[in-house]
Length: 61
Image (cartoon, rainbow, N blue to C red; front, side, top):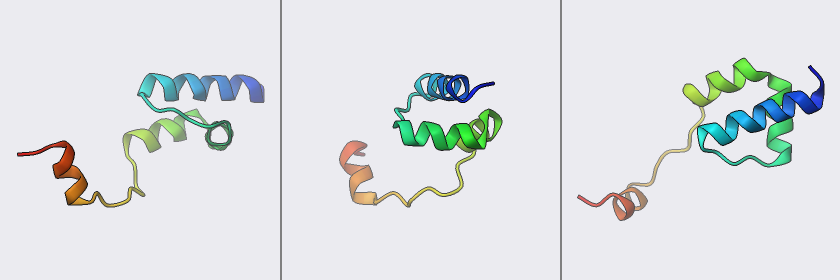
């Protein structure tokens, strides 16, 4: 696949997954590959901790 096709495929994946992505992020993910990007979306490793105050603001109860 060409770089343009890879980026288009990753852009489609990110839209379908419900995420927006900058051109730079699309290029980075295209360099990693489609399968690696899917795995990263399904099983994220480096997620910042969620602040409880923010969580309770949007999900009271």
